[in-house]
Figure 1 (cartoon, one colour):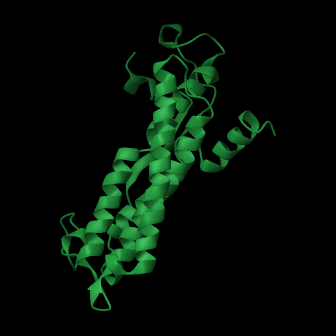
Figure 2 (figure 1 turned 60 degrees about the horizontal axis):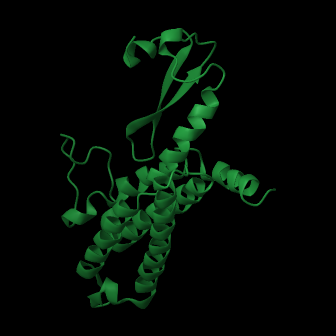
Length: 212
């Protein structure tokens, strides 16, 4: 039985979630008395959650997205060099420059944490609660990057319509780098939810690391 057929099994309900940016790329899935054929079982019986936790730990490590965030920071810098603030490039503004610097410091710390985690995995130690740390900090950094990009493009980020670039008669204004600033910001709100919300990750850390 292929995965697409399995999703049609009785008791499985998939409901779309439309993000703040207007996209449909995530869903909520309800499982009610679903019967899974024995030949489709992927782990020991009654050990499904054990398997899921193992997979989630690896997923959360990947969600940290250090390389993607590095590219995001460079993009913000590019925008800040082009946008003017009181007659000078925005990147010269000490308050904006400080925000970028603080973001880069946090990103470096995240990268080293990720490298330590990957080194542990290479030596045979699976990811533990540190994957929750990576997930929390990684998604927070990703959201801060979208916030800074939206702040940098200024008023060009305000006239956002869902149809921009999708075949209608609406056209974005301002430079090309500003066109996706608002929808990217809205879309980025979901990163702190998927893979286990950041609130849940803090509970995991409190229990597994702090013993609370």
